[in-house]
Image (cartoon, rainbow, N blue to C red):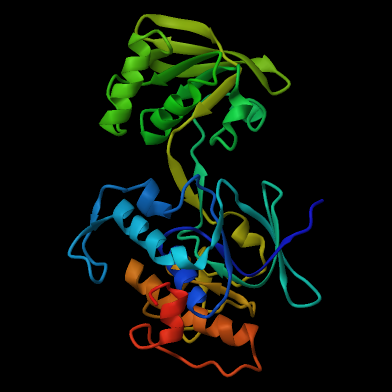
Length: 341
């Protein structure tokens, strides 16, 4: 087993609040690694409403979800946070030296002084399609995300769905596949029009197949797919398939957070309003996953919580050091950190 990555802070959740925490922690010289179950940063903003306008973020009369994420990524760039995407935290344990050992379902391990939980309503979990017996094939030949495209090389791939994820992976995996079929229940797609156009061009060129219908049965043994039964308007037929990627959207679940020994209240984490610390010293919860009297589930509230939690984390990490609060508008040392001077 490889040695764990040592860092000051591990942030669980790469949504807007988790990203802004990188900025606030960076101002205090605390280095961060960020973990998220999705394959890109941005949380709900990027996954659920990237083009939806948001009207209550200070300083923006209107900004899209994706636009906000892009601005935050630019803002935190000077601090060099490292991102570990497509991973979910599966274990969190405090060590004898009071640091926390964190492990993800991909086997990545961390040792850190402080943990920030910024996981929104919990972790995004893929919705399982209503196909009998699909559980037996999961993680072996049925996957809900793509971690390495190379793992799909020379396979007969079926992708099911009509949103951006289905279309994006159709376009990305087609060059790797022995064959690729996209299946959607109707001949209209929710994804970006440019992606739809590129997909239809591949179909017209004979490089992939588009089927209007749904998968009703999986055929194979020992977790390995051999074929899938596809029902269309013309009837049902078996299609050769060694890899299935269903993209039926995401649902929010608290996930492994529930097993970390923290006090919970209706699947939310109670915190104080001075530090936004949980019942476990050294673990802070910010954003929609926390609860306290008067809590408002707003992005701007999460930004406020991130700032106070970062200040508390600095004090906890350096208890013998005098922590001097400074303003970015007037502090030359902070401006140097930001690369302004």
